[in-house]
Length: 389
Image (cartoon, rainbow, N blue to C red; front, top):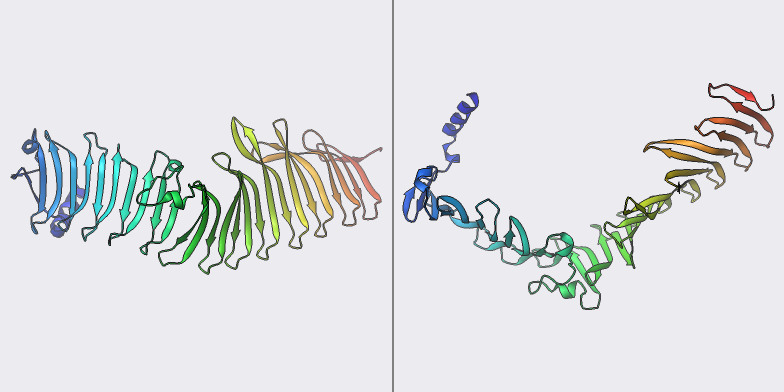
């Protein structure tokens, strides 16, 4: 009751916000809210704003049901036109116009979705976008233009699809010869370049606002390498992909410090898992800024069991620790085998031997001169006993 009262007050306070329309069918006035006046009737319903006399909308009535051609107006000028089906989805040609009467969008609906050639224009009539819409994006193509009619985006299809409006045969390199294309911002600044052959990107570069590269890509067979750069031009990341299937599978991921020094590298192998090809991590290495290794993690499979072999280093590059772990679930792991720690002079500092439950069963400790300080057997209650005693 309270909500109904508020709605009534709102209507009384702001009557100008709710325009009243006068509608007619085949030249005779009708009340579109009264089903009795439209029942069984066929024709075009035209509705105008009562105060201004401007056309607001037109729609087709078929045997009392509103479907078929629909038109909407803005300030008395045609704004949108499309056709609906009895169950709702739009079908056939759909168009939209700007306030100056310029056609700015045109495409064909199939069961409510755009299919085939789709074009749009700026208000001055110059092309804005030409697109071929397919059932999936990889089968389609598109070209976007700036207001200055410079190319801003290009997506090539499996064959030329945009002629005669765009020569994507030449732009996408379908004639047997590679094509190099430049892309610009709306302000006319160079944003990126691409070299294409048979619709596939072979090389590309993107640029920061200052003109320096932000990323580049190069294809070599089925491998694709991407580099990413800071605004000062320093390389910060590198990725390598296997592009022979979809989705593409990662082979390498490297990170660089602001100085350009490599600080982390992850390597992957392509493996079959549950009938699908996937990327599996096999190496995760970190580096000190002086270039020496900081840590290395190697991942191997023992049947279905993943084993992680860990090595840590001093900043001099000498080995500091090595040991292996078995993955148990997604987040847990269990130590296995013998784990060794070293002094920087290369001598062994400690040796921990683990049982099949991941508990230390024997521990030996040395000093930096190589003298054995202790050799203990450890028990599950935390107690220990010197070996041989």
